[in-house]
Image (cartoon, rainbow over all chains, first blue to last red; front, side, top):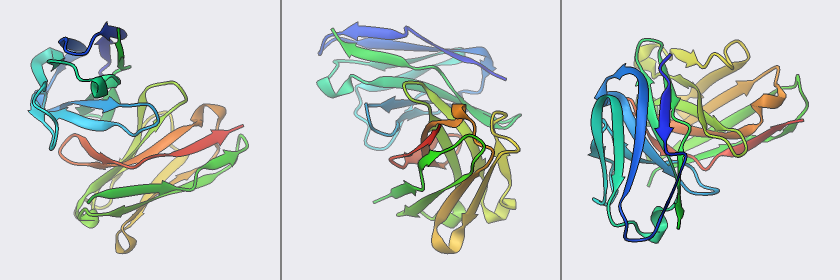
Length: 110
Length: 118
């Protein structure tokens, strides 16, 4: 089973700054199966990025995903107040099959 | 507008059973794969399982933590998804979300329903 490890656990930044969130897989994964979600307190997760780098419908272009193999990154340029939330990466393992999530990165206001 | 609305959560004793429902609208429900994902209080997301569509024989798959205890089913005539949970354990306490699965991602989510096993 592939394990996704997100870092850092908590990221403290100010509005207007750039955020870089990491997701590392325990073995090489197919980029098509890698997604990112945002979750705010008391709300359901929201799909941000799929296929490692494609933005979901309605997601602002300040959100971007990149990476391949075992290392993936979600970048948020020019943080807005509404961007402070928890972010999860997700992988679909077609061989099992199942979905796995990283443990999350909390992006908090500094 | 896509809406997924879960219901059926509540308080149940260890060893008990509960059936969750998810009513879908705004999506071609019968064509879609559907999934359940849960989140224990203060914890991260955990995939529970999924059910494929009729064309794929309504095949189900489950996380190891719930296999043999939980059953996912659907009623396409009512655009509804279900999660039958038996032999519940304290560690099954969580908010349960239904979600549409679309090409290796979960693109629409319900608001969740809380299940407390105590």
